[in-house]
Every structure is written in structure tokens, then in C-alpha cells.
Amino acid sequence: FVAVGMVDGVQIDYYDSNTQRAVLKQDWMEQYTIREDPNYLEGNTGIYQGEQQTFKASIVNVKQ
Image 1 (cartoon, helix red, strand yellow):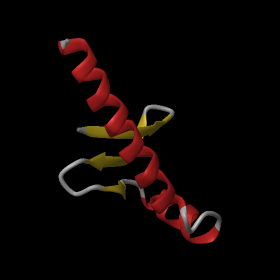
Image 2: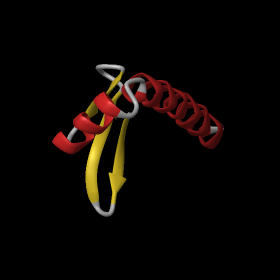
Image 3: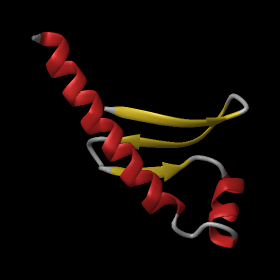
């Protein structure tokens, strides 16, 4: 499972189920999270993990 965060057509982060964590893709996002939202990656990792579980459940339902 892979999720990608986008702003104005630019990728800002991504989540990969193999690593189980969100990773920032833009330098300006790193600066923002340091100054304004130090819990951004932890919070988004949790959100993406929840989306992964929802997607997994949806696939199981569709298969039935």
C-alpha cells in the first residue's frame, strides 16, 4: 500500500506499507514541520496506517 500527499500538484510526502512510516519529499515541508508542526510525520503516519487498514478491509469486502 502506498499513499502520497500532494499540494498544488507537488508531492509533499508519501507512506509505504513496507516501511510503515510517512516520509517528507520537500525541503520546505521539513522546515515547516520543524517550526510549526513537529508532530506532522507521526500524525500523518497514523493517518496513513488507518487508510491502509480501511483499504485492506474494502478489498476484502469487494472480493466477497
